[in-house]
Image (cartoon, rainbow, N blue to C red; front, side):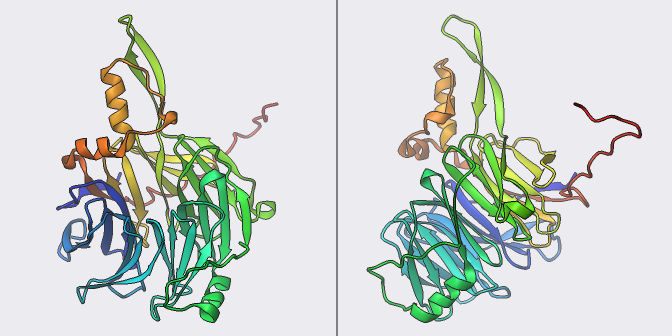
Length: 391
């Protein structure tokens, strides 16, 4: 089993996102603590990190990503609606565009040199980071999650809507019509594919397969859905349950009641080499899965708080985990203290109440260094000679 290393100087408020740099030596972190942080591996000991940059901003950061490989440039979006570029070497930041409402997701395509951002205003901005030009695309609904392949953009939205766009087509449209001025109108573009999610409840995360053939989504109801862009050749969509626990809670009569507690699956991350993927849940659990064989590869001991974000380094050797007390935790503790059963499907705690009681000592960033083959899918079990199939 690989080692687990806690990073120094974490933010004091809830973590929202983290991303490995293209060389796997730096970690970009966003949080509700109104700053963007960069942690760097120490040259003397690659299993330890130090805080290299801390850039204070006015508003919380909801998502972050890196820019061009080889550069020390990152991007962040947040509550103030702006899409910001950070040049950590120069110590500067600039605004690429502004949405009408908070911008919740951002991702960069090195294959097309395109930066994608989404907003709760129901739009997607497609940027050329070099020229500053961008276009604004009207989405089918309010976006919740975003992920890219080398050729596709997958946007998961409310009402179970999923839109898949062709990156090359977006790049062409950007070159033809993009400009640096704010856009009052939004382009109506037909997605490459449109579908309903295989999950019935609200989406929390989406991650694309490294080979570009499909994607996985996760929901607040402790489920993960696996889908392919071409189900006729690659396989049919399916879903499975995960991140659920049985709790024994006291009843008013003095007895105990067994309650099945369902946790949200907050984070997803694919291994770039093996094609397995990690899930992180509100229970503090992290597990590895094989999408093609429909099997769990490994499950780790639960961490002390909810998993807010995950990312696996480009070389596949390191898993970064953002840990923060989750919104659902305060509700669970309150119900537990009052001796009531818990049903996590009926919502979460009031954000104001949550942040007032957040224990900053439980906000942590940890990195798991995989042992050789630790994240590799398990081979299918061979049937013994002469064994008959059931049924």
